[in-house]
Structures are given as C-alpha cells and as structure tokens.
Length: 152
Image 1: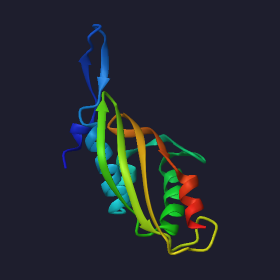
Image 2 (image 1 turned 90 degrees about the horizontal axis):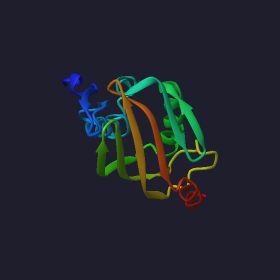
Image 3 (image 1 turned 180 degrees about the vertical axis):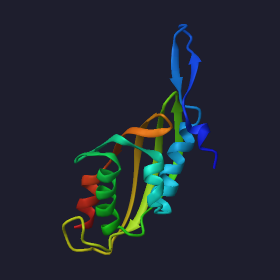
C-alpha cells in the first residue's frame, strides 16, 4: 500500500493562508476500523496511530498505542466477535467523522461481570484528527452505558 498518500500536504486556504490538509483522512478512518477492529491486525495500530495520540471515551481517556491496546483488549475480551460496519465517513482537512454500527455477542467477562451471551447492536460516531499521516486524537460517542446495562 502506498502510505505516502496518507501524509499531509499544504494548500492555500480561501483566506490566503497555508493550512495542512490530509489528502485521504477518509482512508485512514476506514483502515482503522477495518484493519484494527475487524481484522484484529495489531501491527496496524502502530502504523495508523501516533505514539503520542489521545483517545477520549465516555468513561475516560487513553494515551498512545499501549493505552488503546489495553482498552481494546477489555472490549474484545467481552465481545470477541465484535464487527464494526462503517455506515458513513465525512472528512474536511485533517478531520474525519466516522458513523459506525457495532454488532457482537457478550461471551467474555472483561466488562467486570459474567458473560450474558446476549447480542449487542449499537451505533456511534468517531471523530478523528490526523497529523503526519496518523491518527493524533479521537473521540468516540455512543451509548456505552446503555449497552452495558442491556448486558447485565
């Protein structure tokens, strides 16, 4: 894959100033969900996420690939068959909003309670900021509290 296309380039804004524009932040968002979540490609985490990245969740934050891996391990430990379908991606400059739908079955106990064997079907949005061709910051918005309540 040609990863040079994921590097920012300079353009002249309407106001005459120079701004950094990510040429394919949509592809970065698509690869994140497909490779990291659906294919479980651990090496893609370091390839797509900056070392000093910051992730914002409903219940806290994580920093860098190691922090993401810890959060992902908890999630996949509870929902090992989770699949995330991208429903839409909107991008502007170095930012992208990804609207997604996650489905899976609660068969593990890493959420802190016994597996319910119930399915999940939740929708959410992830907002990404890219810098130097990698995800620098992200916000996840979805009803995690409601999902957890439905599994208890």
